[in-house]
Image (cartoon, rainbow, N blue to C red; front, side):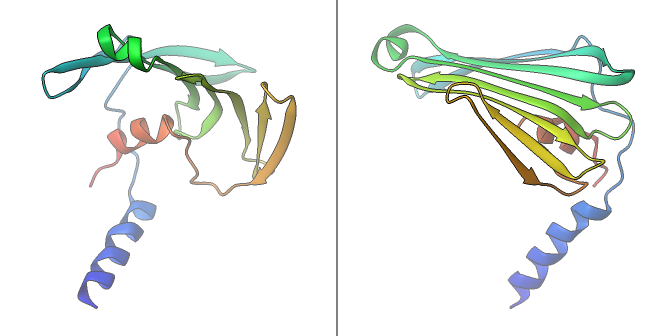
Length: 153
């Protein structure tokens, strides 16, 4: 029972956390070497740029991941993720996911409208469009990493 209360307290603390000065800025570039034991599996990068659209100041983060060497020969991965989120309150504006993982592909774009509390998902591969209700604190896969870097625990 005490574990349940701890978990509820821990999760609810995120909703009351305040965004402080961002722990990142335009020009940041991170590169990771991915390995499985002694085997070099691939690489991943994250890069931040300033971006302006429709008068809104945004961060544009590009995340890329790919396999290399023998791993690429057996199972090729080429993933590209992009997120655009507002500088003032870290709300996502647009999220793009283009992946190719051993022939499994996705090409999706998500547009966030916080005035209407709706996210529109465009599936460019299937030529479909769907809308989903969202709340004010929602984040996409990539912007959530940067949001967590700003939270003062």
